[in-house]
Length: 331
Image 1 (cartoon, helix red, strand yellow):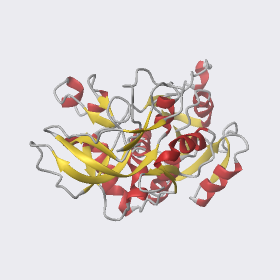
Image 2 (cartoon, rainbow, N blue to C red):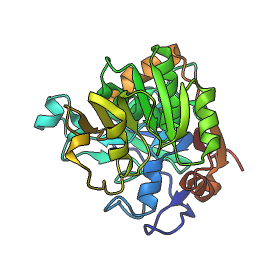
Image 3 (cartoon, one colour):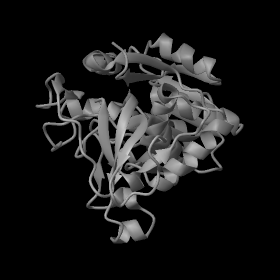
């Protein structure tokens, strides 16, 4: 099978012909139809996340068809379309797993990081760690839901239901999905982008932003909450200045540059800073049930599998509205 392989962080992916994987007793073999390109992939490829399992096939927003199953797998059946997300394994027995926080399991393993990912024609997955894809979505449209959607949904949940005026910092794949959820819920959102990024600001307004402008700008009225999707630590103090007393700043990324020091006065007033760590399977089921009812419409740009480096570079330099999606059947 064809696959794009990372041999060394900081180096481009290389196309290789690899043996088609054989599913273990509790695994599925999945033929990849589409795999969205996530900023976390970029962090892995650029060496910003430690100790990837090399050589590595990246990618964790995977949609594909079950081709075969291990001897212990009854469901999902061969022929069903499934989604594969970042969390690929948890022990199931530790305090975090039994307490509903499998995303914090110390033995968790992650797709496209320590487990084979979706920048390939085939991949394998533990049958307990995949999701049925809503019939309303084709493979390309569904792929960004598997991380941008799930992490965005978890990030919003941490802001609390009482937050009705929300700032979104960084208007990329996750933001364009969660903006639609906010509009569906009748909540107001403001979009804060890189200074001068008029393309992203126009995209946010198209999706219903009450205001869109530079992240260096403070809103006219305080926010109830701020969701930070950009991996820029300097946005944390800026967002704290923008939220009201009692408000929450939620950092939605797995990696962020260092947060600069800031005066206690902008945290005081019972403001809160929270981080989002990975996701749970319950998050996946909840969001994939919600998405067709919004309905969430993903904005995508497709690339051939061999063009994975181009897709990563377009993401790296902010040249995308929505999400890049690799399609092995192209080219």
